[in-house]
Length: 288
Ligand SMILES: [Zn+2]
Ligand SMILES: [Zn+2]
Image (cartoon, rainbow, N blue to C red; front, side, top):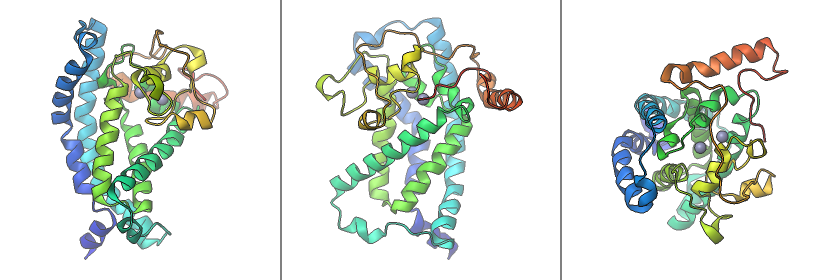
């Protein structure tokens, strides 16, 4: 009874779990596409630093994928609690039966990206920067940087996504392709290609646009927070796109290493609490 009710609330979860557990296949598939699309830029010999950071990122694929598989099973209880047990108002499933598939995908992409923009903006405040700094710590951005997510950030973002998906009652047929598009676009924007997307640069985020987000140039701190659609940055004052980004990336004072990365938010919280968030804790937060 309980499980059939749960299935009705978040029927997409098995699909999503499979999608994430297929990360390894995606990893190798993307490697191939990456070389074909990137040509010379993709085949450029990586430096030792790049290899070390990529190895760290691939280790995170292992730990984070395992967590996501565990986490999503439990998040169905959370969503069930909100929308079935507490009966919070939400969009009805009937709404989606009248929406053509293509429009459903567009609506879901816009809604999730809008939500992601604000969640990402919050991660850049001094209260949450400790959780997000790991993602910015790569000095050599490669597509593997898209996996450089702290376990706490993964939990926060998963709860945020599941809440919206549950509230919208998004059907599995929409969630699965949308998750797939977002997953692959995220890898694309972290590629070391200097693509700007030319005249479409204000419509869809490019690798160059997102590289500015990772730039260590202070003018770019807290800018280009969108995942997919720069319209949010343009609307909410965080747009920064002065041309090709040739600046360094990374976070000053951040030591690379799996354990260092995992401990960092706790170190940040400890020092920040001692200083009552009045001054720079470990590394300065990149607030918008
Ligand atoms: Zn960020
Ligand atoms: Zn990034």
